[in-house]
Length: 302
Image (cartoon, rainbow, N blue to C red):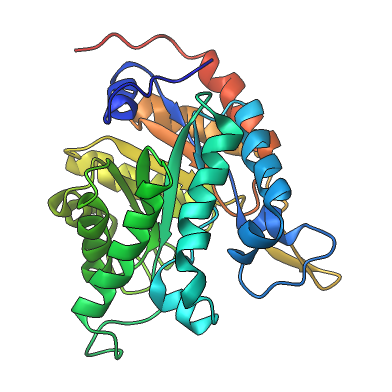
């Protein structure tokens, strides 16, 4: 079913009426390609555009309302380490244009902005100005490519996620923001769920929440804390397919997608508005989530 793209905040209007379904893992999907020979996943956008179009389309065909661009590591800080700085626009704008062309008006496109992979001063050597510029450039390139919203995901540091949200917000597009609580229900930098949620709200994110992590059980505990505190924005959750295992030298996710779907149903019933899936998931996970969502009662706006 075509989505409404007639005004900038159409995706936010949709959330008020029904649960919103994001797509699943990008990195896991690309790593499963048999002839993987790239250092950075973002290179696939440049080298195999047909493959990328198929990935985007497969998630839409499975029922996703929103597909996410292959630009998680597309900020200037990460691209510099990968030797891809000069290809920044081709990676970000190019991915946005590929996704837009692949899905047409059948889904919204989220421009993916991941953490920088470095530390701000004084823990690291990156200044606030450098990080702001890295995220600003990426956000503007994604916006120029035609994305409908920007997703800042998998952050662990409050200062960094707020910089990313504000840089993304400067484009005028809606910003969704999630942090990863994978160490005793805290981020790697020691941020508690409610503190992370509030930081994202204060920075201007339109939707806040959590992604990645150690699986649906722990994400449920994170969401319970956020819901108990009373979020001022719609909540979003994208769980990993459990904790990965190394089998015959290959990283595998064995968590049953049916169990992920059951947790997602409980999240919706508790008050979460947006769900997708993260590492280890596939378009089959998205298909099962779609079927579950379509069986939920229709929401009556307040």
